[in-house]
Length: 455
Image 1 (spheres, rainbow, N blue to C red):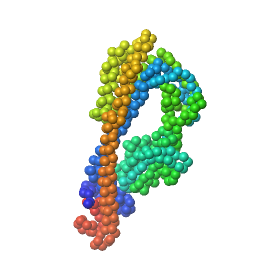
Image 2: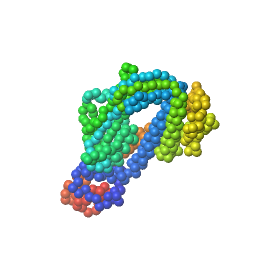
Image 3: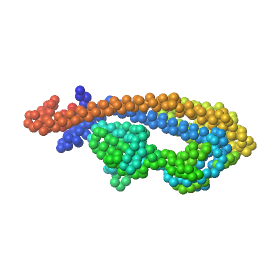
């Protein structure tokens, strides 16, 4: 059944003229989509849900980073420090169970992401293709020569009349969790895709629908390569005391007991882990910086895509409550919580407290599960667990997005079919000549606008 069309008030005065069938289809399809309030409503709902999902991902990432920092202060981590002889090669941070000693490290290769670049367009807002619904499938895996082995991770994206520009495509890829940017050069504007870090982050991209979109985005390491590959996906490779280690990330954990390595370049470095009271002040400073960073991130999310979100509010309340319940002990170490929820430190007061009783200050943060860092670690584990509010909310939104995307695809395909039918009927009638050239439903005869035919 045809969908209702009211195009005269939108396209009054336009005429198909000498346009090709493809051009007419694109114009008609775009008009139908623009006038259909259901499509507009679904697009708005999808955008809101994708924004919330992205915000929840940022919330998880911020909390996980702070949890790693809290974990690094428990046990002997607070009173130990790690130094690197070559900071341009790597830096080191002690954590729970840090083992005193020295380690010879040789970094041979850094982990990196694959980048793919589409052919340039005149402008980032230039329409590409007809706007017909096109399903994009992005598979991740490992690439060896011309062979590609998928790892089971897949992202699905729909390109249609609402987003068939470079900017629209970049937004669609980002909403699916893929890093996408638009780069400018003397040749024009191009879409750049960046995969996840590590050898298993290579991409294979297929497209079904609009031939122009497939010609722009399809990429198969073992076949058609319409995108230009830049950097290749690879793991970090290093030797620690002669033992070969590979990692998908440039942050290495679990290889040196209680010490994390952040790789920044190739070359050799000696890492020394030692016990030192000076590390207490430094590590507490890192803790304060980490707390303030996560608090700032949560406040930003509250003002943006996660406004009034219950999971965000729960995280904020628990973090603030933890600091307030320990405010008296923190004040003795020169640390206070201001009205904005940020921690402030009196450096001289903290140094004096550490000099007077380093053990007491250490126990404030780590004390067999009773210190602030210990409790925060446990609290954050609950906030990030599989049964947490964040995880449940993400699952619900994921299902909602899949349902909305399915509805939008169905409606878009129906409109595309209607546009095809209208163009075909118009072409048939307008080329018939004579009395047959009068378009059905319109007074008089002779050539009429395609958009009059749509009225």
